[in-house]
Length: 312
Image 1 (cartoon, rainbow, N blue to C red):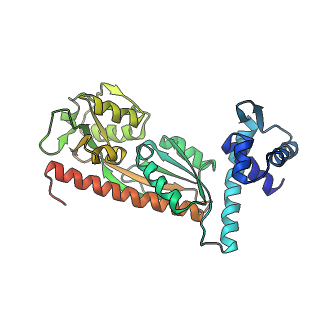
Image 2 (tube, rainbow, N blue to C red; image 1 turned 90 degrees about the vertical axis):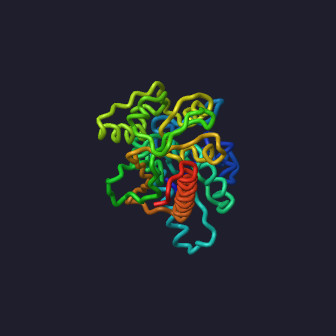
Image 3 (tube, rainbow, N blue to C red; image 1 turned 180 degrees about the horizontal axis):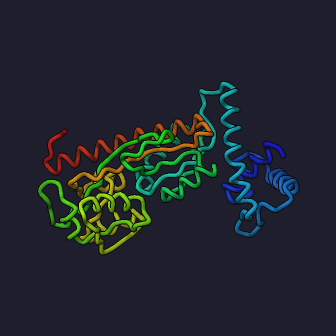
C-alpha cells in the first residue's frame, strides 16, 4: 500500500468521479484508475461502485476513508513542515460548521480566504453539533466550529466569540419594542424557531426553563435560511444569534431586539488533540475567528444604535 494510492483514493472519494479527481491531482485518468484498482486488490474488497453517475463509495470505501483521511492529512502536514516550505501555505482542510455560521458568514470568509491562499483546498460541511463532533472523532474533519455551553471549559475548545441571542423580526412588521424584551413577552408572539434537535433550541429552552417558561412556537424550522426568509416575508418573530442573519440586519431587511435576561451563545472551535492542525487549517480558523469577531462587533453596535442602548 503506497502513499500515492491512498492520496488518489481520497481524491476520488471526495470528488465523486475519476475525471474530477484526475484534474485535481493533475494526473491522467487511466493512471488514477489503475492505482485505485491496485489498492482494491491489496485490500481485497471494492472501495467504489462504478456507475454512470460517478464513483460511489461502498461500505468498505466509507470505512477506508474514515481510517485513511486523517493519516494522509497528517503526512501532508508533516511533509510541508519538514520541507521548510512555510511561505506558500497549501493543502486540504476539512472543516465542519454549525448552521448559524454556515448560513451566511462562512461564505464571505471563504471568498476572501481562497483569494489569499489559492493553494489551499477547503472542504466545508454543515451540520448539527453532535454530528460534527462524531465526524471529528473519526477523523473525517480536521476541526469543527460549534456551539458550547457558556460555562463549559474543555482544553480542546478555543473560544471564537460569545454573542447574545436576539429577537429578530422583519423591518416591515410595524411592531416595535422599547428596550430589551422578556422571554415571557416573546412567548406570546407568533414565533418560528428551530426544533429541539437543533443546538440553538437547546440554548433557548435552557434559558426559558430557568424562568419557568416552556417555549411554544407556532412554527419550527431547522434550516436557518428558511427561518430568515419566512420572517422577512411574514409578521412572525424568531430567536437567533445575530451572526446567523448579519447580512439581512446590515441591509435593514431585519431588525433585532435584545432579550432580557441575556441568552448567550458561545461559539468555539475544536480540533483533534491527537492530530495537530496544519498551517492551512490554522490560517483558515484564524480568518473565521477574525471575521466572526468583526461581524459580532458590527451587529452589536448596530443593535445599540437602533435600540438606544448605552455602550457597556
